[in-house]
Length: 193
Image 1 (cartoon, rainbow, N blue to C red):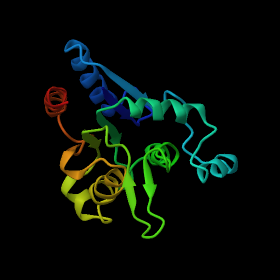
Image 2: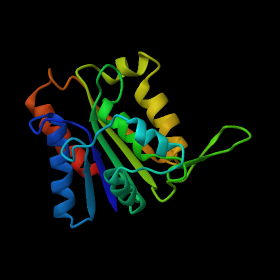
Image 3: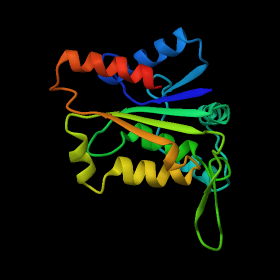
């Protein structure tokens, strides 16, 4: 089962056009999928003191987190769609990682070495689709590259989503490009997923 994690608040965004293009193609192919739409779901990315008490017990009182975890357990493929804001993931997506990828569910920590072992090994393929108003090369060269070096190579890898099965696709200069290039990317991305 494909699971799409979508993190953009505006239905008129290009990110939403990407989501629509992919889901329409999956529906046409009659391929099963599910969407985690963080904004539409009203997901709260901020930890409360009460939630943090549960975090250290490897549990959560938040029913939406439990629902997301069930969806991830059913997944064999994961697709993230989000804009790059300030060289990084949107806070909503960062909060999803913080609150959903709990110890005991998404990873375990070796008490002697502190290293993490990912538990999401049911997910065999991950695609990260991002957009920004700047070039991918600029993002890769600035701030230690929060998308590739931190999100993909560290966070996702620590969750068991291996780098060799993770692909990052980026659409640059989303606000400055032509409608023709936007349409072409939507056509291409729906064929890839």
